[in-house]
Image (tube, rainbow, N blue to C red; front, side):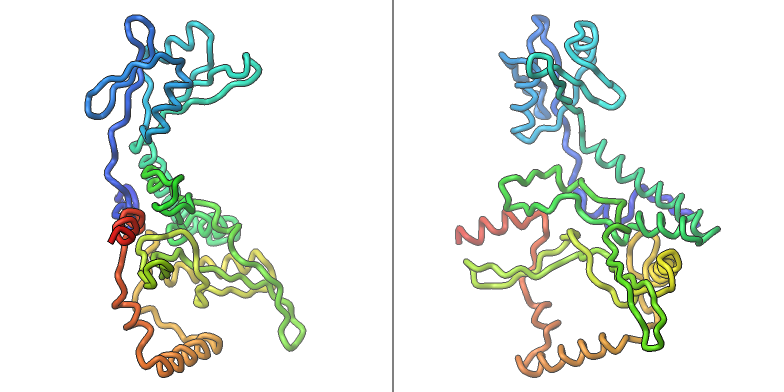
Length: 310
């Protein structure tokens, strides 16, 4: 059954509300002006590049009015691509060009929508022919592996709210850990270790002397033993890995619940050690974690400021 949603639900819930862009236009006197989302207007005694940097430095998304494109095409002061929303202007006395882009939250949403549509097309091909080529691209773009494009947290000086729109929706196959293993009988196999994105993490705050759970992080992947794949060749291992992912995850990236699975000996050993640790500390780790304060990733910076102020 084809999924008609524009993007996976879990991702839609993480995106901020689209903000209105700032419209850059030319006054009757040819000065650079900007109409802001609150309808106020600023006039710049500067060239387009300087005005662009000032607006961008204030966190604004920018769209160029038609007359701006027209000016830079007629006077040959730059190169334009109106469809792409870009103007290349000469810098360093014409020795180089700099690209000024018009990118809005609607544009960023469109990229995510396109990525989801693209994966659904790949998924349909994979279900018809689960060979190496289709399996590789299916794994490479599967929503279970989508992570944020930026590694900044919202307390970082470089943080911008627009980063919440940035997601890596392809390229996962390059992150799969590949190794060679040899069985006791001498047979050699290619081993793949992979895992879906991590939605939350524990963070210890040194100043507050407390641990919190930050939700909606999605910046890295974990090792999921259920998805480990072993085969005589890399191609066969990729094919097996794709089938394992499909067994435990829906196409939208959500985990399938209640799928039967027999833990490996390593997992059993790890579970036993966790039980021993629980006995040592006198409480369950899961119960301890469930009682911790929880802060959403996008709100972490503000929460931290308020916590320090207290």
